[in-house]
Image 1 (cartoon, rainbow, N blue to C red):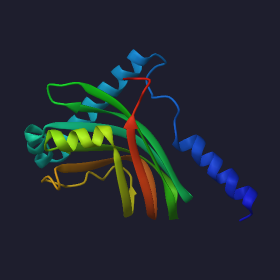
Image 2 (cartoon, one colour):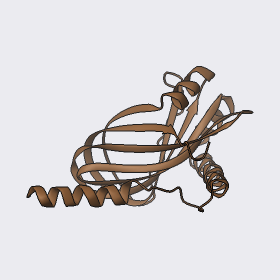
Image 3 (spheres, helix red, strand yellow):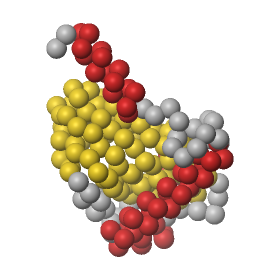
Image 4 (cartoon, rainbow, N blue to C red):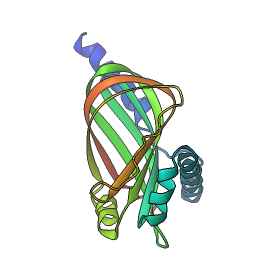
Length: 183
C-alpha cells in the first residue's frame, strides 16, 4: 500500500472513529441529558444480561458508562462519550479515544460499563483516566456481554457489543478524560 493510500485510510478512520460532538443535541444541557439517558439504558441492558453485574453495582462506590465506536483497518481508531457517577455525588462527563495497530478489518459499536469498588479507584479513573488495552477478540452481531462477577483491583468492566463485526488482534491504548465543554 502506498503512503498516500495509507494516509487516506488513516484520515477516513479518524473521521469515522473520533466523533467531535456527543450524540443527542447541539447544546451542552442536551448532550448531558443524552449521556445520562444512554447510561441508564446501558445499565438496564447489562443487568438484564448479567445477574452478577447488578450485585456488583449495588455494592460499588460509583460507575461509568461509555458508548463507543471502533474501526480497524491496519490501524485501530475509536472514540466515544460517557459519564462517570459517584453514587450520591456529582456526574463527570467524559470522552474516550483509542488507537493502535492490528491485524484486522471491521467496525464495532459497543458500550463499556466500569464499576468502581471504592472512592480511590473512582477518583483515579476520573482524574487520570488511562487504561491500556491488549486484546484479541472476535465478535459479531448482538452477543457480547462480558461475564465478570467480581472486582479486580477495585474495578469491574463489562463490554456490551451492539451491531457490528470486529475480527482483530490488536494492541492499542485507550484514554478516558474529562469533557471540558460538558462539565
